[in-house]
Image 1 (cartoon, one colour):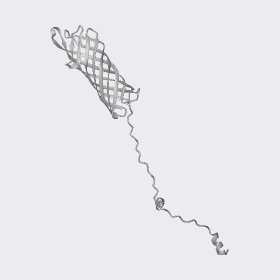
Image 2 (cartoon, one colour):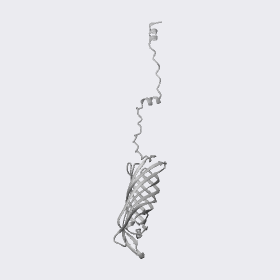
Image 3 (cartoon, helix red, strand yellow):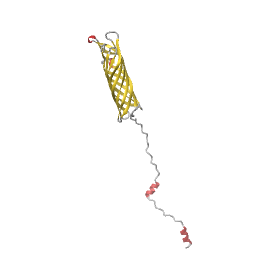
Image 4 (cartoon, helix red, strand yellow):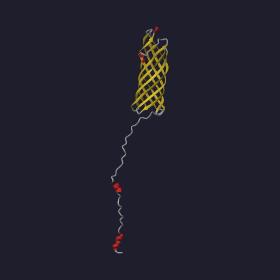
Length: 244
């Protein structure tokens, strides 16, 4: 073997060059890009439903509009204040509501109290011989009432509720004596029933403002020879509830 052939045999073998496909070339030369996640915004916190065994507090103020304000059955002159000043009285109160269960409709109990008063209010007394005489009455009422309550949320910021149950009243009452320059007075306890409903709107986190109405009917047994005080009528109030 001559030296030329020997040199050729000792040269390193060069692997053949493979032709690159157009697809591979496009992928190799394509600019490197990173896939960005879509911009995530924090979700607004929605108001949670009323938790079971949760308690909310409600306060209210407004006025009572009585269809019946009658003192009768005693030794004093009977008095009717239905169409007079005595038929209207301011009211202030509050209480609590507890959820016991339910999902779409919340079911629970409520316990409420209220103060109502009227001073120097005009009423009509029936004197001897059936003569009607104008008299002034003073009346102070303290009420305790409560019962089952149902509540439903309409969207995220509105609720509607309704309740009903027994009512206990303590009344302090006095009236002019149409036969003398003095007055007759007495106090006592009574019972009755109530039904109420209302709608409220969220004004800030945890606080709702709304309107409520209540119908009640009760009879108070007064001492001092005044007999019974019958009260029945509608109550309209502005409510503020906290705790949701």
